[in-house]
Image 1 (cartoon, helix red, strand yellow):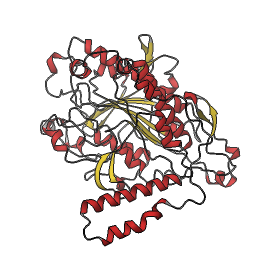
Image 2 (cartoon, helix red, strand yellow):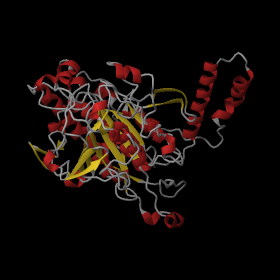
Image 3 (cartoon, helix red, strand yellow):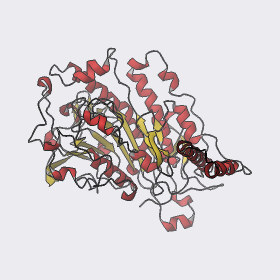
Length: 511
């Protein structure tokens, strides 16, 4: 169970003391237990969980490039109508790099055995219907898809909030003040109610930013209230009450918009009064926008990686001092010098047996892993937490739009770092696929078959439980999270056990 974070005021120590470090601004040094008030020590030292997810487009990565070799799987057990398999992750040579697969690899100085022990790679988590291109499936809003098929079009009428926002608006996750509930980089990945506190209105995208300095200002900006400041909501509450309850001409839609406006003011008031202290910080001198606006950004993976590492700096700093503990990053650039139509010429041809397109898309994802995803893991692991490191108390995940064929979502790769405060078992390669039976015919002679596994809904439910969000706040009828739908062309590939009990712990992943 999460306890209230330690927040000190006045001249006492902050939850973190800051030191010049990563990214050109302050990073935290360890909290010093001897400096904490004795009453805090007597209560025991709390551990805060964090959640961050990076979402990349397309996918289409062959299983042999994305995942470790099957020989690494040394254990197996019957689970939900499948045979689940597991093995310890082991570093090995991957060309000039080291890694656990060709894509999940990096320089030996960056990807160490100690970090691999804090990692998981999971195969066999599926969306059991045709959703094609989308940005919503990563975090649970299947309605955000391009409508490329009947299944996806049907799901567009059933939007859901995304798991990051469920965490951010949970009193169990944020029991005390916080400056920014969820840090969002990019758009159309994170969704929540238009009236968040009441969970009413419409499900709508949460506006994100591509500006690392704006992200910094959202979390650490100078919004400290003055001692005599009159509460914002108090200034307009009488007008609100008069309009809300006294005007017979007020339409239902206008009444909803008025409620949403007041809720927005209330949330601003809460942020203004947040007591989280991150010490004295200096705003970074360099931000992501000049990099993004440079003429060759779209074809320069080095600049793309640089921009995303600036976001990582802000996330790491916020996580270190509790100013925010949830982040969603739309990591949707190509990470490649390819100058043609990436969507049509690479992603849609990555399954072809000639392998040229597969080599291009695999190289791009390897670059992302080493220069963006691993970068954030290393930064979080460099910050000492109350117990272990910040990474040890974080669930850091990387998800992709598709499985090993673009447009199809069997075995959507999941890579994680961190143990979420001991809630997750780490150091594992896990495979939930039924490799005894292929899913349909192979595309144009590709050497990569598709095998079915378990539902992505079960992963979403497990992520919420790992972070500590009670089932009553998110569980769908029948269990799991997100719409429990199975397409007509997919039903024969999934035994009933694989589609039931979707809130159950995933074997080998949960402690």
